[in-house]
Length: 133
Image 1 (cartoon, rainbow, N blue to C red):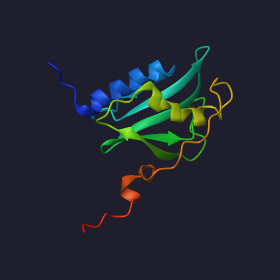
Image 2 (cartoon, helix red, strand yellow):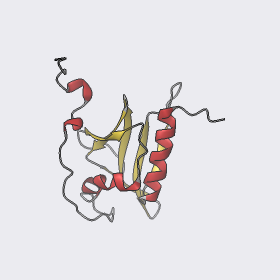
Image 3 (tube, rainbow, N blue to C red):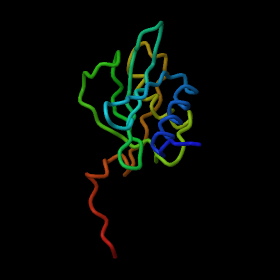
């Protein structure tokens, strides 16, 4: 019997995709609540070179940018849309993160163009209301 919620299943799929993309993934499990985020990490020689958090907001995955050198928060973070929670994330979907990984020396990720901005990149609570016509 499968007792996982849609969000828990989506987080496990994200971990599988991250590992297939050569990343280390750690699900954050807060005290007294369900898991809501995964830290994706680039690990070299046993040390975290960079980290990026992907979290669930409503029914979507959002990733925090820029990537954190050594996993430490050193800059203000913004979020961008990665995809819906109800569609499994694949390793190919995580290729958009390479733009951010490549900015940190030692990740071994090659520079790629910045992912295009999309309307979904604006957090839902900041989007103008849709009028019913």
